[in-house]
Length: 165
Image (cartoon, one colour):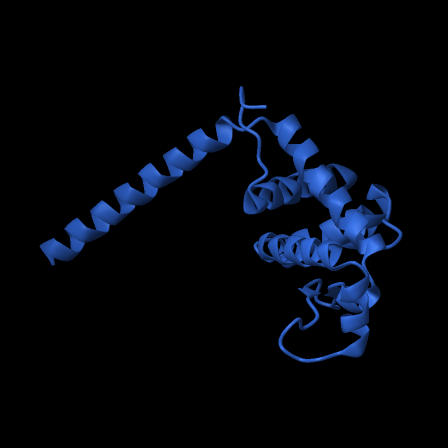
């Protein structure tokens, strides 16, 4: 019993130390520069979305997930023809979408919904419209949106630390 209690105490201490460490890291992040960096990534997403053929784009599901088309060893003449036209662009777009998706899936469903409606939809919604749809106040919505952008920036590793612009 003593050993179990000792292990539990050590685990609790580790959790507290880890939380303090994370808080110190978060305090050293430049919020404004990080927001600009993640907005740049979202603009890049929109650019790829507009310049990449539809059959190569991820699709948004009703559960607010992004599903990538299969780029495996299957032969598809549409994809083959598109790749011949501009191979490098499509490789960059594929790499970007895969990286973006890995970070995007680290968000909660509601955070993904906010990002999609505010930035990734073909016609992005206004903030007040999204707040009304989510049945939250605009103030709560802005907090949720900022948190989602911040988490996405951390997941995509585009956060900017103070003094390191």
